[in-house]
Image (cartoon, rainbow, N blue to C red; front, top):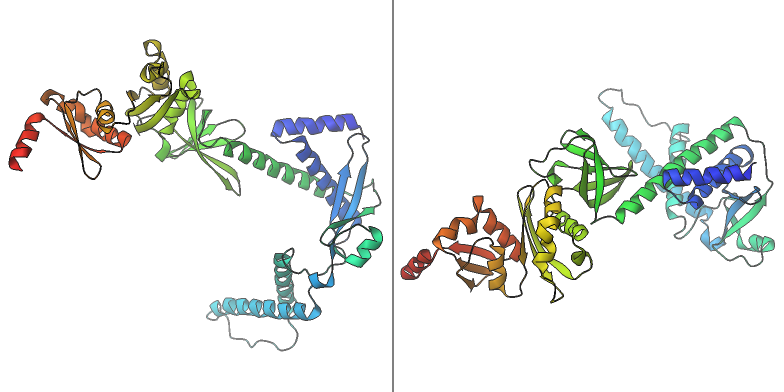
Length: 422
């Protein structure tokens, strides 16, 4: 074996698939072990292989678990389990036969030993039962997988109960076509699994962050974006109303959540999530990313308007000025990324009256009365009513979301009439 070329190939696979070299090497060792077992091993054996990349030599071991009598099912226990599994299998078969009664004539259950097919089901059921209990309480002894503690100590004196005993095997160099095919399948499967694990781990760490993606295709109402090692999905509910997507278009998206599925990791993206706006400001405003300016709250109606409340932790820094930037350059970058969505930046205050007044910007406020049950009565000039409420009530609605107060906007005359009626 040309060990340099082999090591180079491992490094290349690891780089292309984005998985650690150790994982690729482990996969190859598993494939070699599978090939060895196919040609030279026995049924039930656990074979382990180890490749030395410096010398190019590969060694094989048979792995056996060290057990005692207390860890093994007795013949009586196995008989009881077999009876239970048989009963369950028979019950399952009876249910299936009941469904076929109308189509097939009734036949009596034959006496004597179970037919071969039933025996197979009983055996499978018993094996699954013992596998489920293995490692918990007791195991079904298999001389190819287990070894008694006293026998194990003759081979390795310091071995402990429950540990694995490695028994060296003769290294073989010649393998048949079937063994080679088995090894190939193991490598392909393990590499795919390792690749999925790597992607899952990487994007799990990116939840709550924004990443850049390129629109690849549209299926039904879902948009699929190329986000590097895999595709992310932008479902209809997370798209911005009125925003159109085309193949090849580059977008910044918020990583909403990552789910593990049988087909691989599924990365859900969002363009409408409110935190997308705050994360964009973190990228554009150094004071925010440094923690000098803090985004206290955000209220968004995607595609239309957003209000954010900012607060400065440093007296010398104007939070609104820092977020807006010189001549509005910083906020304009965010607006452009969001397709022209309007953004109102207001200053946060611990005083509810001042905070609510700021939130209703650009409308001017005359007076604010704090009412019970988290309600606030806001008095504005007559000519400012429509501005305070906004188109379709959007301004006051966003102000309420931003502050957490239920806001009632009224003109001075309306307030006086309300007092007279009371």
